[in-house]
Length: 318
Figure (spheres, rainbow, N blue to C red):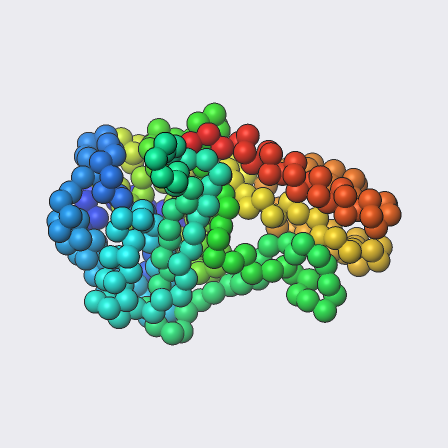
């Protein structure tokens, strides 16, 4: 059973209390310095002040991270390059991935292109680090026996919808992240029993995910109202994570041999849908696709892809 700890206070003041090289994984979603209101504080600093703030907490994060540890840092476009420079040149960490979290709807603009993504930097403390690829694979579009039956690498462009305001898991927080997004980071870069640190806990998504992935987690949160909200969230009933990579429901084409297909489809549920409340959509897709001619299969697959795209568009409202 996971051990969860919520520390109320300023991350810059609380981080020095954490022992050197004691964290397996750090997930940080700091304020983007865009002027958002977070109850008892505003996300608005001068340019140089914000860079100084970023350098201080990243330096402390580097100190508490184990030599085999990984850090994921969310950031908006204005400061992402500066954070990269701090991690790369000042802290001498090892760049691994620049992840693009793509969502289908967001802030609208009438002059210029509307933003539809956030960036996430993935750095490791050394060249020796954990990465559990089998835990985060996604279904392949076409099944090939010579390929890895377990699925494909999800790549560095991740599509997860925002947590809809009608979603029963939606918290009263302006920048709540989808659980599926955090789930992938935790599964990829930690093992059961590891310790995950969330420096800016906000709505408590990282703590919630670790709770159900058997990871220990320490969360630091400045706002006491958010601390109370997180505690309530951790005590609430779990009915499945609130988001899923739409590819997880994809039924591979070319599963023509019945014996191979039956084995794969059973494994698919265990590998890709094990934390979801229902298999109904997937099972309907299987039933609709197989038992048809090859041309019909391809036409149906195109219809299913279209339906999934339309469903994702309807689910997102941010």
